[in-house]
Length: 98
Image 1 (cartoon, rainbow, N blue to C red):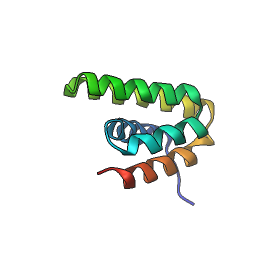
Image 2 (tube, one colour):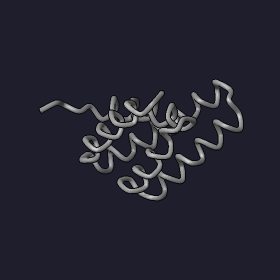
Image 3 (cartoon, rainbow, N blue to C red):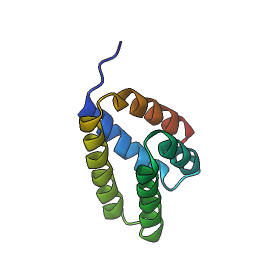
Image 4 (cartoon, one colour):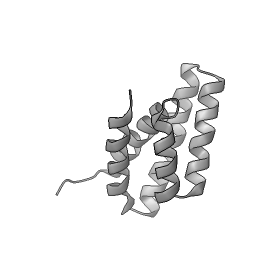
């Protein structure tokens, strides 16, 4: 059994979610996030997509990664059992990225 480090999972999840936000993988990720993490996370992912499409500046992408890292870190602190789910989301989303 692999050891999951919550800080690492949050960081990888943040990078993956932001990378997927402006690709076709977004649609799958959005539905899956809504189903497994809840509507609030799905709406936040939508906001990330809108911000990145509205201002493709690298600084905006860094800000979004930071925001997602904090969100996912909070989620993992509150519900450590989601680490495995997030790891699966990261793996599947990464495989869907161009």
